[in-house]
Amino acid sequence: MESQTKNKQPRATIDRMIARACPGVTATGVSELTEGFFNAAYSVGLSDGSAVVLKVGPAEGTPLMSHERNIMSSEVRSMRLVAERTDVPVARILFYDDTREICEADYFIMEKLPGRSYHSAMNELDDEARERIERQIGQYNSRMNGIVGERFGYFGQPDKQGSDWFEVYRSILMDAVRDAEALKIDLRMDPLDMLELLRRDADAFREVAVPKLVHWDLWAGNVFIENGAVTGLIDFERCLWADPLLEVGFRSFASNPHFLEGYGLRELTASQRIRIRWYDLYLYLISALECDYRQYEDRGTYEWAIARIREGMAALKEGGLEP
Image 1 (cartoon, helix red, strand yellow):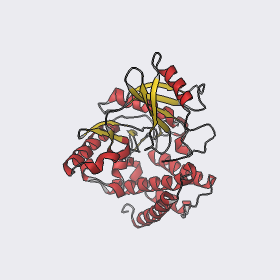
Image 2 (cartoon, one colour):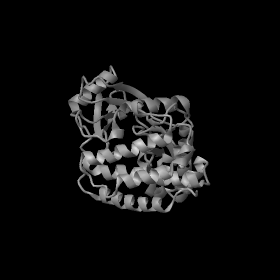
Image 3 (cartoon, helix red, strand yellow):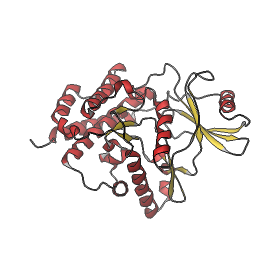
Image 4 (cartoon, helix red, strand yellow):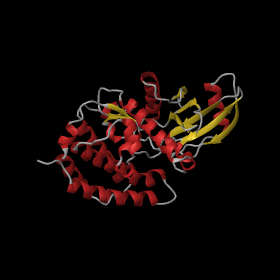
């Protein structure tokens, strides 16, 4: 996917990055990885016969959404944390450079995972293989959510973290609203109505007392598989300390019984169902912003998201905890 946030680099710059990160070897082949939406990414073959992945952050001055601040540093630190604390398979970070000496952005180099994305392979798999993989994704996601933090909020934004999940989530929602206002993006809903509904549902959020590490972007494109099994999870850049129900696997439009079975959560309480609706809405808000912040070639994502925002707000107005 083409996006203005992708900070593509010439081969000469990539060669310098490899030379700094991997002394004694050179890049023998470079190919762009195009499945992602935000960073520029490359598969790089090395002269010692190995292969790595290079990720480059957006150029200085690129318009970003509020939650995207410091996300490359967040990705590196969170991947290392998951590798240290769990058996969840993640690529090993080989080198991280935030000096801006070689290019005008942070970049890092990680080992290349075996296999390919589940998104690209799923249509070639039979039902049994897909179900097995989706259960495994749920298991790994649950183990990752077992990592406990001290405060709620985006991993790389300690200045915006807090001890009250309701207050932090309200701030996150309003960041999205302000991001829309900054680029004059019409969300076709009244933020004051949204805040009034959120206040009504505050008790559902008060149940969340422990910040858990949440990937938040674990869709099929960020899961690598080989021989019918998960080989690794990628793209931790949007991780945050939050309620695990924020995970993609719990979105209403993508509910998967095999993921839920693997995760170990079969029945939802009324409060959990309400929070899931709110987390759906946050994803719709971010999706509505992406067309303008990424400068996508068509408006399909925006129109889809606006329709979902309308449906989501209607569902929230009808719902709520019983008094």
